[in-house]
Structures are given as C-alpha cells and as structure tokens.
Image 1 (tube, rainbow, N blue to C red):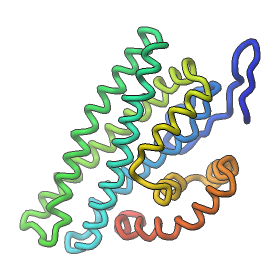
Image 2 (image 1 turned 90 degrees about the vertical axis):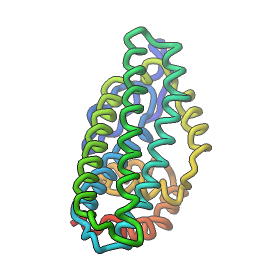
Image 3 (image 1 turned 90 degrees about the horizontal axis):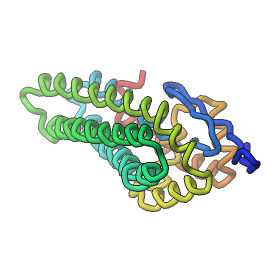
Length: 245
C-alpha cells in the first residue's frame, strides 16, 4: 500500500509480520527491510545453536563452514547495529521526547551487551574449526553452546525491544523518504554483496510473505534470487546440515 499525505499526515502502510516478530508498529514508514533482517538474525542464531550442538567434532569441513558462516553473520549484524547507532538513532534523539531518548539509550546499551557475546562465540569457534581437533574439544563445545545460546537470547530480547518500542519512535519521527534515504546510504556501506543478502533475507520466509516481498521488490530482485538461491542453500547445508533436520 502506498503512502499519501493529508491533513493528518501520511497514511499508515501495511506492515510485514513474520514468525517470531514481537510487534509491527503502525505508521507511514514501511519497515519491511527491518523485519526481514530481524527474521534472518533470529533464524541464523537458531541454526547456529543447533549446528554447534549436533555437529560431530570429527567433521572438520563442517566446523570450518560454520566458522565462515559466523563471520558473515557477524559482519551483517555489526553493520546493522552501526547504522542504527550512527545514522538512525541520532536523528530520532533530536526529534524525540525524553522517554524516546531513554529507549534509544537502551538500544545502544543492548548493542554493547551483544557485541562481547558475539566476539566470545567467534573465539570459541576458532579452535574447533582448526585443522587439528583440540584434546578438550568436548568441553570447548559445551562452553560454546552456552555462549551461542546466550547470544541468541540476548539478541532476541533486543530485537523484541526494538520492534516494540524503538520502531514506534521511527514511525513518529521519520518520514518514508527520510527512512528510505537512510537505508540506501546504509546499504552503500555494506561489505556483503546482494548475491548473499538477497537469498539470506528470503530464506525460510513464509510463502505468502516471500511472494509479497518479491512482488514489491520487482522483477530484477526476483531474478537475482533465482540466480543466487541455489548457491546460498548449498552453503547453508555445508554449515548447518547436522542441525537443520
């Protein structure tokens, strides 16, 4: 649904609702890209927990694929949080109320809580994905399961808080055009290319949501997904095959 202006401002748009999503605040800004990324983050962490828990320690190639996939996940999440902290939240601080700023302070504090958890997972994966299996691999895996589960839970709480409170502030204080400009500027700095991002966002979406998103995105994005999805899924199986069943 397109936005239109009136005496009461732009009309609200129909917001995307996905499994696991805590809320979808009404307003004029189409937050589809935010919800797609949140869905992908939640899905990935569930897959990492399952893979780290169930992958046999002798499967060296699989552990190396998990480690590489974790690096890619970390790149995207770090970029996402950096854009929020450096581009979106500052604008909202200037325009929002004291209560709004308290929520934004909490968003940044939660980012600071999540970052060390992500770093600890990467540190735990390094010896388990090396060429030689450590003699204490079982203990290291047990510790890593605790770390990745803590990262999943912490990020899950953060995403729910963002969806419930911070995105309400976005709807109140950003116009659709402003949000689109901020998103395009942010995308320009992304180190991960569309060949990964597009199938990553589409993976495991409900069929109706996937069709809606592709219809809105247009034919070029549909073609790009068709071209990249096979390779993406092969890479997913390489990393997550023991946890995806």
